[in-house]
Length: 255
Image 1: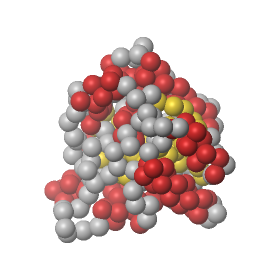
Image 2: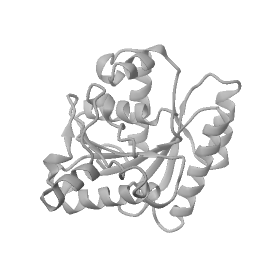
Image 3: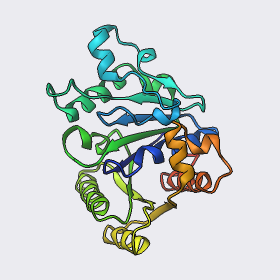
Image 4: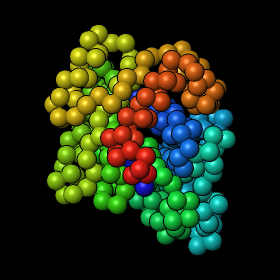
C-alpha cells in the first residue's frame, strides 16, 4: 500500500491537484482512498459534483460509538474512496486535534483492512505544520510528502516551511520528501524560483500544471478535469504528475 500526503498553503490548489491525481490513479485500475485533512472539509468536493460529504468528526458527534465506516467513506463516481476528517465546532476545539481524532477512528474502524486501498492520499492544509496537521507526516501514515507550490512569494515561503518540517520528521524515521508540484500562477521567473526551492531541499519538481481556464471551469462545476476532459492538456499534466508520484513511491508493484 502506497501512502502519500499532499501539502500546500491555503488557496494554492492542493485539493484540485489531489482530486485529479486520485482520479488519474483510479483510472489506472488502482483502489484509491483520499482523506481530506482540512477543517473546511472540501478536499473531495470535486469528486462529488461540488457537494461536501459528511465528516468523520461530525458523524462522531452524531453517532458516537455507533459510528460505522459506511457513515464516513463515500465512493465517487470515478471510484475514489473519499473521507473528510472535518473540524471542531468553531471556537470550541483544536482543528489539529480533530484531524488526529479522525485518523485514529478510521484505524479503529479498520478502514484500511476492509477497503484495502492500493494508494492513500492525505490532502493536508499546510499553512500550519504542527500538531494534527503534521499527523500524516508521522510514522504509519504517509511515506512520502509532496508539496504544491507556485512562484508566488508566500506559496514558496509556505512550501519551504513544509519541506523543513518533513526534514525534521525524516530524522525520526517518519515521512520523506517526495518532491514539489508546480501549480503555475504565471508570475515572473516562476519556474526558476520553484526550481531553486527544490534545489534547496535536494528534491525534484515532480510535474508542472499550467494555469488554465479549463481547470478553473472544472473547479467551478465541481468536477475533476481528469474525469470530465481526460484528453485535455491539463488533464494529461495531472496524469503525468500522478504517474511520477507513483514511481517515486515505488510504483504499482509496491501498491
